[in-house]
Image (cartoon, rainbow, N blue to C red):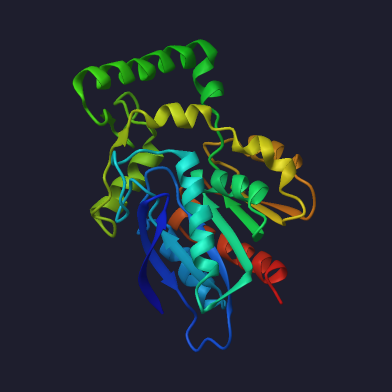
Length: 296
């Protein structure tokens, strides 16, 4: 069973779906989900949530503020600190629901959502297990070089002055594009995936991001706190051919304490979003993990 829900996060309404197992007896263990950069809840989350609820878990899938059905201005602003506060408030709301066992709540995140879960695993002790899939680590300096990064930041910072002068709420750039066309994710893989989603099952997807988002994404350093996650159990699932090098994910994983597990799948970044057999393999690994650590 799935129903529409909403909760407040720092004065902003976040909207989503609560999945509850059919014929639930007592209170269910629960999973809160966090999505990828620019993704709305219709993308990726349902395929995993349906598998989790079939395994006996309640699941909260929602749009972070500024995106999809949730409120917040400016639209399409990617702010990991804001998303992490949304998740904390989502956990608070979820634990208060009558169907939920408040002492058996876990977190699942994909791409940037995986980074958010690294943060939550370290700083929210209410989570009893964490799963990070295709974790979208900050590799912008490695990709652009320090000089290139500084030049890009100069342009992004100048946008603040321009918006102050004009009164504009935001400057927008494409979320995904082909290489050389100015998108945040200017990769054929990302462009093909999000374009296909927008043209089929996620028609409300908005292919743009507020330029200010790049300041937050460049400054994102949540994985630096990974050593604080233990004793919360951490499962990381990553593709051998992910755009984020699997070695970078393993380096973060190695800094975490036990209990932990790393699963490497022979796939790309977006393969694990919706394509088989990787979604089933990834979901099954997560279900085993949550069964182990969210059990009574």
